[in-house]
Structures are given as structure tokens and as C-alpha cells.
Amino acid sequence: MTGSIPVSERIRARLRAAGASFLANDNIAAFIEDGELEALQAEVEARVSDVLDALVIDTQNDHNTRETAKRVAKMYVREVFAGRYLPAPRVTDFPNAKKLDEVYTVGPIRVRSACSHHMCPIDGEAWCGVIPGDRVIGLSKFARLAEWVMARPQIQEESVVQLADEIEQRIRPLGLAVVIRATHTCMTWRGVRDDSTTMTTSVMRGVFRHDAAARAEFMKLIDGQRFACR
Image (cartoon, rainbow, N blue to C red; front, top):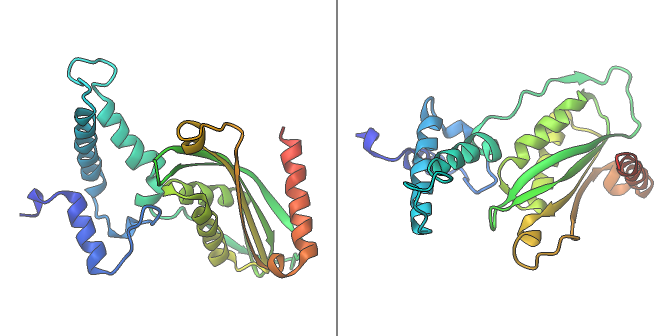
């Protein structure tokens, strides 16, 4: 009986029964059972094929679009929106054995996402600033968490908060700062088509939120990294 029910409906039913959110930028990996991701990808392929038909594209005779639905489904489920369907990357934390309490920064971290309003690409960079507490994580883990959070339909204002939340809950730093600067193709490719516009969002927590000198030190450090990378 369940085989006749689309896998997306089965996953939605579990989410609703648990009272869980499944907004565009939520992670729903805990509600996907073994084998269902493959079935979901197949369902997305069928739906994308319907979209191409509605756009009056002859996918049967057009060699350029014959496999487009399959490619798009794989791209959405396995790549650009994988942060919705895959569990969080493993992030091992370590004791802050030397009781370090100075500011360190990580970045620029390349971030890629898609605007949840138009599904247009977002491309930019993120910087993280930390004043450690009792625990620390390896530098590469900041990039892994950023990739996981951004690989969902997002708006930048929410993604920077999600990334800060993920870092904070793992290491409980004395201070945490996260800045994302990105270009949105929903502005450069469509709409006003302004190629010069970037968006900057930030989250300041702990010492960075309450200490203007610490905040200024972080901003000076990342400005130096931006200049060095040009």
C-alpha cells in the first residue's frame, strides 16, 4: 500500500506527526529512511519533467534537454540542496588545553546556495571569528558546517544565523562572529540586473556583541584577509 504513496508524502507525514518544521532551509535528514533518498530523487525527476513539458520544451526530440530532468533532480537532491537531506557533518571538538582566549578568524570560506524566493544561485564568502571557551574545533570544520548549512534554499539573513547556531552549540565560545558577503543572481540575472550589488550579513555573540574593541579587531582582521586574497 505504501508503495503507491509518493515518497515525498510519506516523509511529510512523518514530519507533521512529529510536529517538525520542514521549511526550505530546514534539515529533514532524521525523517528520511533508508532507500528513500533514491526514491525522492526519482520523484523530483518526474516533477521536473512535468515542468519542462509545461514550458513547452520538446525533451523527446531535443538532444540538449533529453536528460535534463534527471540531471536537475540529482543536482537538487545530491548537491545544491543536500544540506536538507543529509545529516550534519561529523565535527570533532577538542579541549582548549592552553586556555587560549584571543581572537582567531577563519576565512574566507567560499559559500554557495540558492535563493529560496527564485531558486537563483547565491555565491559569496564567509568569515568566522572565535574567542574560545573550553572547546575548539579544527579549521576545516568551519567550512564543512558552512557548506552543509548553505546547501539548502536560503535567504542570507537566515543562513548566517543558522551557521552561527551550529558553531555555537558545538564549542560554546566566549565570543562568536560570523559574516557572509555574497552576490545574489536573483538581482544580477533577473529583476534589476545590477551586477555591482553584494549583500553583507553578520551575527555577533558573546564578547563580540558586547565589546566594541573585540568587534573592531575581528572586522579589521577579516578586512585584511579580504585584501590579501585579491
